[in-house]
Structures are given as C-alpha cells and as structure tokens.
Amino acid sequence: MAGPLLAAPAILRGAAPDAPIATCAQGKLRGAAVDGILEFRGVPYGGAVSGPDRRFKAPTAPVPWIGVRDATRLGAPSIQAPRGDFGNNEPAPAEDCLFLNIWTPALDGKKRPVMVYQHGGGFVIGSGGAPWQDGGTLARKHDVVVVQSNHRLGLMGYLYLGQLLGPEYAGNQGLQDIVAALAWVNANIAEFGGDPGNVMIFGESGGGGKTTALYAMPSAAPYFHKASIESAIGPGGKTPDDATAMTREVMRRMGITDPRALLTAPAAQILKAQLGNAPYLSPGTVPPPGTPAGAQPEIMVWPFIDGTILPEEPFSIGAPAISANKPLIVGSCKDETVFFFQGDKSAFNLDEAGLRSRLSNLLGERTSAWIDAFRKARPKATPSQLYIAITTAKPWRANAVKLSERKAAQKAAPIYSYILDYRSPDFVPGTTYPEGSPHASDIAMKFDTAVRFGPKRPDRLKTASNMGEMWANFARNSIPSAKGQVRWKPYTLKRRETMIIDAQCRMVNDPEQAERLFFANEPNAEREQF
Image (tube, rainbow, N blue to C red; front, side, top):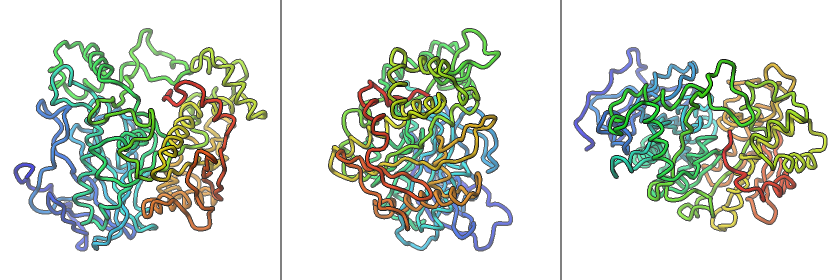
C-alpha cells in the first residue's frame, strides 16, 4: 500500500446517475460520458512531490482512497509561468501535479490501442488538459484509448541537487514523473478498455523531446511499444556538472548559499528565479522596449544525461538500443518558425540586409554559406521565406533527419518520416505572409480537433482527418495509414521515403535533398536554437 486510505474528494452534486465508474488500483473513479465517449480527468498517478521531504525527488506512489473519487475535473498543472485561461476550467498550477486524463470508448474489457501523449511547451509550460489536444475525437472515431499527464516542469522538474545534497536527489524528476504515469497505465488501463500490451507514446515540441528521452530510458522501456516524435526539441545533452551549474545560478538569483534552503523556499520564489526579469529571446530578435540593461534572461531548463535515469543522449551516436524493436514516427512541420516570430512582424518583411543581420546572430561566419545553399534550392524565395526555411531547418528538419537516419541504420524496427505541409492561406497577424504549417499546427491535426480550433476549410479538416487516422492506425498495428491516401512506406537510407501530410498526402523520396545534404555537414545543425 502507498499509505493510509484517504477519503475521496466530494462527488460533484448533480452527477448523472449513469456516470461511468471505473476501478483502479487506488480506488473507484466517477467519470463522465461526453459525446459518445467516456472521460476520466484529474486521476492521481503519483503522490506528493512537495514539501522539504519530497521536493526535487522521484515521484511517490499514489495514495489509495475510500469511496468514489470525482474524476470529472482536471488536475492541477505543474508550477509554471502564467499562460492565460484556455477555457477548460483548469486549476491553478501547484507543486503536487501528478494527474492524468483518460478518454475511452467504453469500460468493456476490450483491448484497445493506448495512445499516451506528452504535451508540448518545452520543458517549462503546458499541461495534459489543453483543449486542442483533447483525446475524445481519436477515441470516438478510431476506437482507441488516449491518456495525457501533467508532470513537473521547469525547475520543479529539472533542478538537480545530487552533487550538492546527495544521491536521493537523482534529478530528471520530471521525466521520472512521466515514467510513473506509464507504469500507472500499465497497471490500470485494462479497466478503461485499453491494452497494456499495445501502448504508443507520442509528443510534440517539448513533448517530442520528452518522448525522445523516454525512447532511451531503461525505466520506461517496459511500458510502451512504439513512439512518435513530432517537431522535437531536446533533451539537450547537458551533463551533471551543467545541471549543478544551473542550480548554483538559481541560488545566486535567490540570494541563498545553502542548497537546503531550496527545499523550503516558496515555489513562487523558485519560479521567479527561473523566469528572470527579461524574456528569453530567439537568436536574431531584439529585446522589447523597456528591458532593463543587464536583465537576467529566463533560465532554459532541460533534462541532463545522468547516466542512469537518462543514460545517454538519445540518437547522439545511433538510435537507442533499448528501443531497437519499437517502431517510430519522426517528423516536423513545413514552416516551424512562423510560430516563433509571430510577435515580430518585421521577420515577415525582410530585405537582404535584414536577413543577413538576423542570421549572423545565429550562424556567425556560416551565414553566407547557409543563405547561398538555400537560395540555390529555392531561387524564387523572398528573404523572409529564406529566413523561415533556414531557421526551420536548424534545428527541426536537421533533427528529424538525424533521428530517421539513425533509426533506419539500426535495421531493427521501421521508421516512418513525415513533413506536415498543409499550406494555410491565413496571414500571420499584421502581415501579408501566409502562415503555412507552423510549429504546433500539427496538434489540432493529429488529435483531429481542427473543426473546433481554427478555420473550418474542407482541405484543413481533411488534413486533420488524415493525420488523426494515421496516428491511430500506427497505435493499432504499428503501420500509419489512412483510407484513400497513399501507402506510407518506411524510411530507408537509400530512398529516404517521406510522407507529405496534407488533404491529399503524397510520398516523396528525399524531400529538400539539397538542403539536407548541406546541413548534414554542418556541426550541431540539429541543436535547439529557439
């Protein structure tokens, strides 16, 4: 047992008499029937991770309860910067944030594929309750079970005290939380109509980085059978010394010298130290007016390679051996960095001098080489189009190609490569630059929630239907497919087969070949820069 039995939180008054009740290892849960599927929200998969005895340590086991626990409300997300109200009645962030959400067609004992999503937001913001990644449509249309978790983020999830306070502070506690969620799924998902022997993990952006890490983690290996890494960033290649240096910088900002003070400091004070007093800036952008001289930028928080929890930098030399037999999808959006520059309208109206000035901050003496290579491949591109293409290639396309190459070279399980290339005609706000397929536009596509978020153009909705079906079928039988679309062939080093996802999908061998050959010879082209 994980501890004393606790009384369950009060059941919502007016709960439907036919509300679904499921039994997990900790007790009974009352969910809700919504649009033909069943939802269970705010389900605890771990115990307390707050207080001087638990902060910055591995997650604890969930505590059983008596009675029937209400599972119709989202659980608290991790401590993070304010990000607005998404209209989903999410609670305020809290240290104790180990909750997950489940969408299932029925509690009937059927063995459905299970899709466990890691949310984006780098390693610092986000939650498993964002409405555009609602798992209901996938569950309803494709007879799958979808699971998403909240887990520790930012310094609460990745501040490392092992070198300062001892081995009980192993670090990478945010990744350990996700493994705990996967273990909970393994033990309990059959009750929710899912098959613990057929689990897919997937994630976008920072969630792609988390999924990349899970793909190399021995503790996660028993709990999943395939993966999809989408527009991935991270995990970053930091060492324990790097992680300790980050901790010392946090202490300096907080004005403390004893690391044990971090165990009792208010969480808001730790978050303040993380955020600094100046925004993180993408290379080539200018600090906004009013930024004080000498301002402290936000600390960029990443996992580190600790040798045990995360024993290696995933894909740094080859694909992780521990997941050799697990099929993989890897890809990105065609126009990733349109998303990141939306607050900087001048990025979409560059002249040649502006292009070179911005890229020189990112590429240094290699600026001309990058511009020449991409201009040769795209002779009609404007300076702004070249800027988006180059900053998308470094790192997103470079990283996706690297992962695809190294998984294909392993010759153990198939790797499927893609580029989302839905060419949205909508303009970036305040400009006449079409937004295309920017970073994060894939979320409403693969969850097939595009009808709820964004324009309802038929070609956009068809793209979402295609992508959602492909991902659900990959979860089902390890082969991504959609009715009426071309067969998705595995990626090989000889032909570099890549699915271009759109309203009408197509297979292309070695897309953007000239650019790929160029950045293949650039050192660390795939490293995160934004």
